[in-house]
Amino acid sequence: MAQTPRPDLLRALPQVEEMLQSPEIKALGSLLPRTLLADCVREAIESARRAILADALREVDVRAIADDACACALANLKPSLKRVVNATGIILHTNLGRSVLADEAVHAVEDVARGYSTLEYDTETLSRGSRHDHVERLICALTGSEAAIAVNNNAAAVLMVLAEFAAERKAVVSRGELVEIGGSFRIPDIMALSRAEMVEVGTTNKTHASDYAEAIGPDTAMLLKVHPSNYRIVGFSESVGVTELRRLADEENARRSLSTCDAECSESLLIFEDQGSGALLHLDCFGTYAEPTVAESLKRGCDLVSFSGDKLLGGPQAGIVVGSRRLIDRLKKNPLARALRLDKMTLAALEATLRIYLDPEQALRAIPTLRMLSEPADSVRDRAIRLASALDDALPEGYAQVNVVNETARAGGGSLPLCDIESHAAQITFLRGNAQDCETFLVAKRRVPIVGRIKKEAVLLDARTITDADIPEAASALRAYFDALDVSTETTRALRNDPASRSGIRPNPAKSEATR
Ligand SMILES: *Cc1c(COP(=O)(O)O)cnc(C)c1O
Image 1 (cartoon, rainbow, N blue to C red):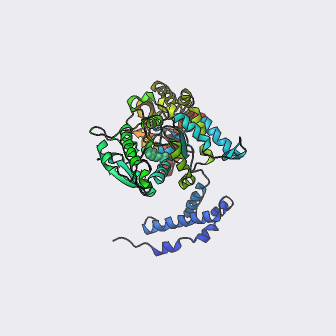
Image 2: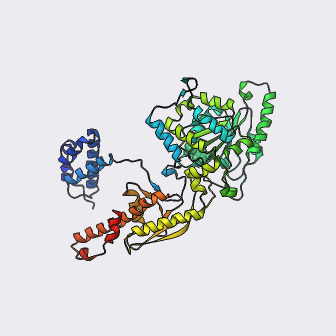
Image 3: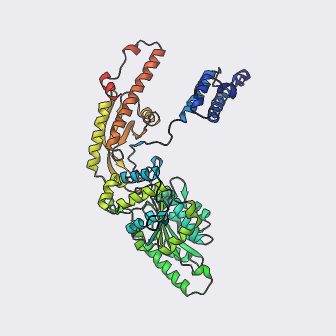
């Protein structure tokens, strides 16, 4: 029979006020606000209460509860959003912040963050300017479009386009393109939010031009094409290209111009492509897998194209829409454009990134996303060798083995989904400790977490996404893991009063000094 929780234990739990007066907690009073300390104390008491109710706590230790509360409070003094070393080999890792900014973009952000700026000030006319102007001309130059607008992200861009041009009207989309994209971006949900009526055509694997043709009516506002991102139907599948959609839209628009119905059907039928990754350069290194560029989509006949700023473009988080002046002007006047507008730091980073593209050769070198995507495998291998050798030097003897192995890197972020990118990694196989514990340590116990992955009981650190500057950090993190391993085994032995604690394996003292 299960024991009933002991009421005497529950009664012995301290009061919040009482705990706030304890010396440990009081000492934090000068560092942290009282409300925050009180929350942490409450949480610590609550977790002790839950432990008692679960019969996992046989004694109320006020000191332990105070320690818990202090640890919770002190965590607030450490940054939560911080730099990590990406050793996953996934270049546009959504969880790790997608694109790394080019130096020029970082400097531009710093400049406008530290001082006042010309965000909405025109220095030619000495009067109010528009924040859109800083990036619009560059985007047009790089995509061949007539006009452009940038907002918070591509999800926002899609929402704004649908709300402006398809609210209370119909938008036709292929069932094969009704996808969910990482971070719960679902086309049907965005449609509903914009009050556009979604008309699904075709089937999951095949949609024909005739499916679109049959769906088009006088209240159809747009044909929507969605880049399926990291989802692909391979094999028995068919979708309709923009060129063909253009033909259908032109036919419909010719009909509309002849008809004498009300204003609604005199609006032209638009083709809008949500392109997602937003390639500005054709990356020849990816051969047939290369994503179409924004310019190509426009040339094929899209009226509007939207894409992300921090995927293949390699800039800050943003969503960009390109198209004719007439259509973009309507977007600029939509209240959503105001609600979803970019801040000065993002604009500065975007402008600086776009400017680098004016010289495509320079873009491949200076924009980290493009550099990582296009770096030759030999050069990645050389860095993997440098990484492995730094790790090996940092290791105490007999604890692990480090090798360089062939690996496959990925573009990530839904870009170039079918593309295996040749890569090389440092592979750590464990003679002491193990891959799972080491992976947890490298992420959870380090000021700069090292994010790699595990494959067959080994930790892999992929050299495609690591820079040379990251190598010392990775080496000292690995060293720290093995040092911590020794401390914990020695403590366990000492607790057991095991004489081996004085004669057991020790870290190589020469090496451990060097890395301290
Ligand atoms: C990534 C992506 C989005 C979402 O873009 P965010 O910039 O993350 O908001 C929308 N559509 C497609 C096709 C995408 O690939």
